[in-house]
Image (cartoon, rainbow, N blue to C red):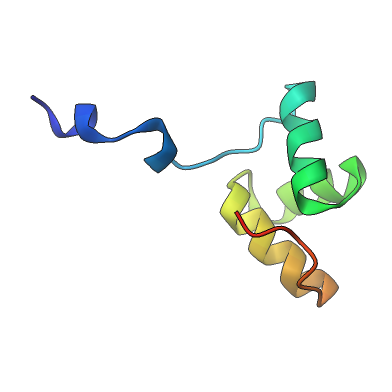
Length: 68
């Protein structure tokens, strides 16, 4: 059995897929932001959901974003 088969999908890095409207809606709702803010965050730090969340907290000085 390979190590890769032991990793569950929940352990995989979470990415924001801007080409998928349902994914965009999920993250907009999760982070309580607009689609424009989501796109700006991804332009700044990439598509890792964890990195986007950290950037949003720092850039807005807010802790209102939902922890993942």
